[in-house]
Length: 138
Image (cartoon, rainbow, N blue to C red; front, side, top):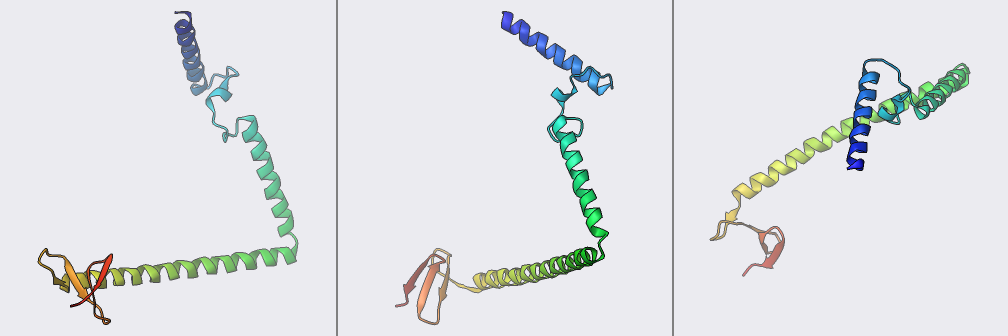
């Protein structure tokens, strides 16, 4: 019974602490309710400081005209590559849709065996009664 009372007391304290934090009343226990990526946790503050240092280093590097030119050139090349990759993917998707449609049309026009399954004859005289089995025509 004591464990149940302790659990209830802990839940009540957690609930009260959370309500205080939500309402903006600082009780010093906020970190229990924050995830690790929140800027108010020690880890979040450390990550924020590190990110600021990285940004500052990049800003300092961009002041160098040679580095800035190379940085922008690389950004332009990456942007073009991404655009070309997107275009190629679009073309491939279009081709895939055409091939799928052609296969569907071929299946719709195929001869049927007595059970209704499509039957195809290949140039080498092989028949396929389903897409996984090949046999010779008789």
